[in-house]
Image (cartoon, rainbow, N blue to C red; front, side):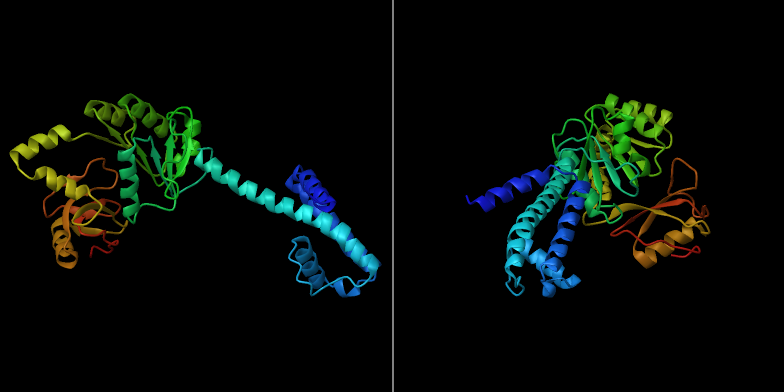
Length: 345
């Protein structure tokens, strides 16, 4: 290796120890001295602002087009020593430091060390259950109402993001840790899904989530319906679901095909799916009239209504039931419908 390369390597290593502020100062000093040196050595054709920057970058980045050259012997020595040696070392360090920073950010995200505190409008999945959780992510990505630009997985056992490119990952010591949930951006998330390997852990996580007063909708899954009821009692604003396997088994035995219908209504893929629509505040209509209009105009079947502030929906209410503003409509359709207004579909 030549002396020039040795010096350049040493200088680059030296500057790499600088922080960004020190590196910026060093680069500014080097740039200034380079320009002053060219002025003092009579290289007038190289000192115009745009020309100097172009010459400086092409020289220090070793591009070397050769269209601009120092004309004096002193200028050539100055360029070969000060500009080339110092400039190449500095810019190499800047490029290397930038690349290293990008890799560090990527690695930080992969290892769950990111921070989404203060983030809003995203989706948080708390707990990771392997293939079933992957299915949850895929279903979220299929539905256009989900914010697929940012889905945050929050877990304590994963070593790195299980679905890079589709999700981000936050790792902590305990799923019920308020600090971990804040890092995942739970308070400002548009939706939060909680599903862990045990009902006890899900319950403690739900209570921690409820303590943060999230602005979005929170739904938690329990295997035991009694634990789900207990969670609902302590966190009434959260939606707690439980396994319907036994109920579905009985219903399928009494009404063959019921399980297929239920699965189809919950599927986000092709076919009819159950959706929810929030009504504008000024909305007012009779359930029966709205039922007919939705069927005629959109081939959608209206199945229920939940009044504003109510916890549970009314399924198949009487036709004269008033559907008021701020409430929710539950319907079945092949695709999600747009909002309706003024009592008309």
